Image (cartoon, rainbow, N blue to C red; front, top):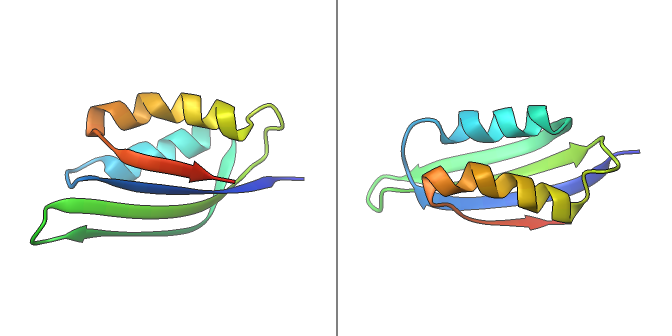
Length: 83
């Protein structure tokens, strides 16, 4: 049975963020259930909220947090993963 999580992201808006996040989820055997994102035109910031399911019992919240750090660093993301 999958476990659901919510990932929230804020960072400087630039190309590739959504692709990087989606590729990460696919590599982790996660399914995106709902996603919303927008860029603040006046602030230059990007915001994203993703509800996803993990089908890998070994990929606990702590494991996913550790793995996502590598994705977040190139974009200098402020992010949180909620169980």
